[in-house]
Length: 210
Length: 211
Image (cartoon, rainbow over all chains, first blue to last red; front, side):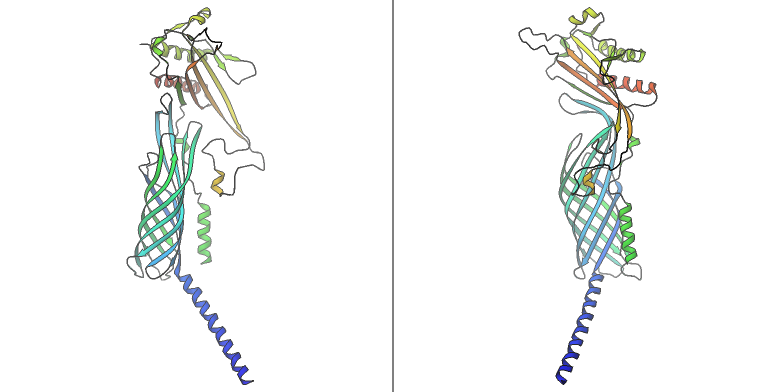
């Protein structure tokens, strides 16, 4: 009888401990996860299509801190770049010519995994280096006259970046995020005037962390 | 925390992923396309026949012709371009058979009525934007809007290729020019756009010369 009573107390204690430890684990996990949402500006490089710096983009990330330095997560971002080309005569083939002005638009949407390494583990200022890799959707559209044409393709995406996370408030979940990045994706796109074989971009991001 | 996530989701929804460009930047001039038969020697031709009227394609089941002052102005621009390049215009109807070149001009005025919307050209919203599951568009209610376009087509025919050794009697088109764009409410503006497109068609076809 007495043994049974002790067993019940032990069982209750184990249950309480396990419940408590579960709560601690969930809290710790929550503390290790951070979200980032921000404005993104970029410029495609050497595409001969829309090599103009535009700020019509956003970046979304979720990161999990593996340890004090490393984090791993997922991301997606998107950007649109526009470029107006004055009226000109284009040789479409040996015998064909086309005279028009053009409004070019390049839309890119990469997504995949992101990782970063903190260079300095301060509570307020955390500079880091990181990289993103995944798939990228890209669409190149040329508007001219009363219509237009476009091509869209998928490609592999890789992007090294350098940035900093700043936590100036008492609430340590909330902060700011700034980053500069370079990216390359393997998308091949046919446009009215040329073929784009791979997309290079440089840009920056400004966002909030929570 | 829930508020922050909610606000983040709202921000995400508020932002349309792909930004449309500012279409006002595009000029109103016609898009001009030209092509020609690669092996043609334009210097071998001396004369051409150009009717004093423009075919209005698609206006009715019967062929109708545009013959007013504006039509004559457009014909005049073509004549001027051809004469500058060393060709001589034959004007008498009976001279049609002896002209080296024939030039026929067609005008197509279209009102594009879009009833179901979407997909009429490459720059329209792509159903794939909303995810890979979708494969097309449809409207569950009727909508409509319209826009007017004008197209002028100039075709140059080689009338010297009358080969009696073959049963084929097809007139070979050796040059094709197409100017196309929006039509506006001002007839004067539309006329000027057509004149500009004819001049541009010749400008980008410097191979048309016998000089």
